[in-house]
Image 1: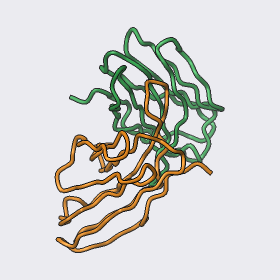
Image 2 (image 1 turned 45 degrees about the horizontal axis):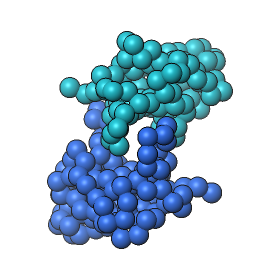
Image 3 (image 1 turned 90 degrees about the vertical axis):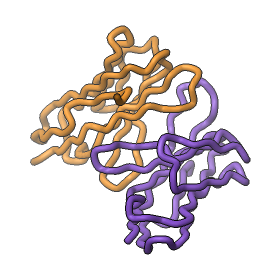
Length: 112
Length: 114
């Protein structure tokens, strides 16, 4: 079973609307969680990172939240733009471990 | 500019013909890694290296080799490519340690084995 589960797998939203992506993980002990944005055919680019003590982090129109007790994170996109069409990948790192656990991504399509 | 450079971006080859995908980073990162990405499976780690001459298998190492003779370079070698290695490949690097260091990814290499 994958240690990082993301939902929904894909969604289509209208330009200007908001959306929220979910990431549930089982990685333990927890070190940090990072959200990446991946445009089609390109390498992932980091959006936000949160450690155990942080429960929210913003990067422009992107806001990530973390509940380390329930092992859940969300990425909220505000006032979506066509350029937000991408896959959003949740990546979790365990403390004391150099390996990372990757989610399969949330595919977002923004339509005019 | 801090970056990870992969070459080539696209490659079509025939089964059994040895190939190398190069990866170079200019950030003096200790940790480098290769991933493959397939539809519905997400990113899966092939091999990683924590420093020069130190490499280890990831989750899907079969059919691949790597080397780390210099800190900046981490080539991926397919000695005898097969069609099931058709995929999108990413090289990534980051500093070693417990800090909240994120990966810097390359732009990807789309490999097709026919």
